[in-house]
Length: 409
Image (cartoon, one colour):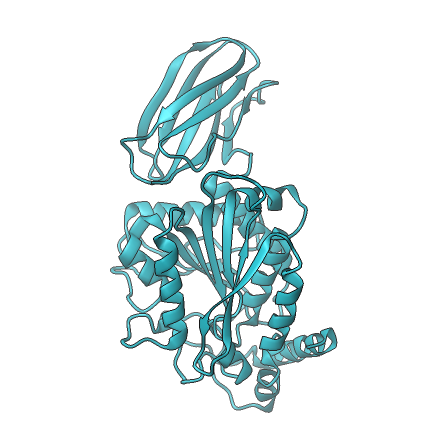
C-alpha cells in the first residue's frame, strides 16, 4: 500500500470522526471503547479503507521496521479468515543484560479504534530511535508488540467484531474462544512460562470523547497491592504528559469483583500481582492528536515504573538539594536476590536508607547512621521477599530521594 493511500484513508477517518461526534455512545459501564453502530455512508466509506490504517499498511510498516537490527517480526497465528497475526519483538541483543523485563502491548482489538494503532506505532518508532530513553529500554527490556490483533475486522470494515461477528475483547471466558483469542492466550501462556515473563501488559484502545485515560480496577475487585501498582504506573505516565491523561479515578471498574471476559481478567486470575495489565484508551474523535507525545509518556512511564531510567521517582526537600548529593539506580535491576544501592554525599550526614513495598509499608532498614562525604554502596539481599516492585529511599540532610527496584524470581 502506498503512503498516498494511507494519507487519504487517514483523512477519510477524520471526516468520519467529525460526522460521528454527536452520535450516541455505548454505555460506559458496559464498554467505554469506540463509537456506536451506524449505517451512514461516511462510516461505510471509511470502514472500507481500514478505518485509516489497513492490514496492507501494517505489512508495509513491518517491512520498514524489520530493517532495524533491534526488530524481529514473527507470525504468532492466524485469524478466522487465515490472515497472519504478527508480533514485533524489540530489544538490543548486542547488549548482554542478565534478565530483560518483558513488556507486552497489543492494539486494534476493535477495528474502528485506529488511534490505539497510531499510539502503538509511535511506541515502535521511539523504541527504534537513538534517544537515550530508547537505548535504555532496548538494553533492559524486551517488547512484544501485536500492532493489529483483529486484522479481519479491520479489512471487513467492522466496528468492534472479528469475521465471526464476535467482540474478541470480551471473549476470554467463552469456550471455545475465537481463533484470535486463542492465539493471544497461547502467547500469554508461553511467555509467562519464560525466565523473564510478562511484567507489564498494555491493551491499546481508543474511547469516544476527548479524553485519554487508563481503565483502573479497584482494590475491591483485585487487591490493595494491585490497586497501588496501577495508581503508581498511571501517575507516572501522567507526569510525563502533564494535563493530557486523566487521573486514575476517571474510569473505575471491577468495583466489587474482577470480570472474567477480558485479557486483563486472564492475567489477574492466573497471575495476580505478577503482571500489571491495563487498558489504555486514547481519544476517538476529531480532537485526537499528539500520538507521539502519548507514546513517549507511556514509554517514560514504563521506564520510570520499572526503575530503568536513571532519575528519581520523586524528590522531597524543604531546601535545595546539596551539591553532589546523588542517588543512582540500583544494579542489577531487575535482580535476584541481591542488588547494590549507590549514593553520593557532598558532606558528612546522618543517612537513613529504607525499602518499602508499593503500599508504603517499610520492609527493610539498610542503614541509619552518620556517613562521611563521598560515594557509598549498600547491599540488599531480598532472598526472603516475594517477586515484585519495591521502592528504596535515601534520606540525608533534609532531602529524601526515592527510586524503584524490581525483584524477579
